[in-house]
Amino acid sequence: MNNLPPRLARPDMSEQQAFAAFVGGWQLDLWTTFRADGTSVHPFGRDAIGQIMYSADGHMNCHLMRAARPLFDSSNIYEVTDEQLGKSLRAYTGYFGRFTIDAAAGIITHHVTGAWHPNWAGTDQPRRYAFDGDRLFLEAEAGDDLVRIAWRRIVTDTAGRLA
Picture 1 (tube, rainbow, N blue to C red):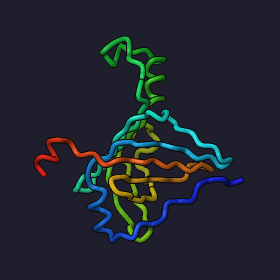
Picture 2 (picture 1 turned 180 degrees about the vertical axis):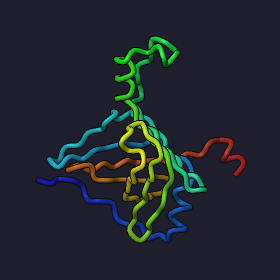
Picture 3 (picture 1 turned 135 degrees about the vertical axis):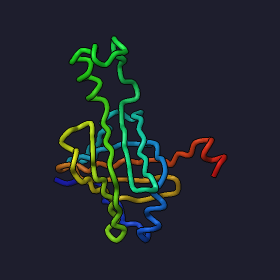
């Protein structure tokens, strides 16, 4: 049974237009995993926080986490217990690298250099994309599931003043 929502439609944009639209900072709006049985979940909760950044020189980074991760008992990372570290790591994900865009296919690919999950380093992570005003949508299949992440453009006060 496949009750997944329709996939994002390919935007009608040139590669240059898509590149310009991506560049900048984006704040997590909502991360949803749609299951084939019609249910959906929010892996780090509806109040998860995160940021994805695309630079004009072709680099990117992405960080997602639970909003209320528990604090460690020590400020020294080398004194944190394995149990505390494990709980914290299960509430965070992040990676960085380069990106390329195939506008004809409506795909941005994150070429991962390093990641919280070591198996992602050296991999390519393709994502379908769409834009709606100040929002960016990225999605990809994960097994039988469909992961869709909605982002909202962020402009700092300083950047807004200097632009």
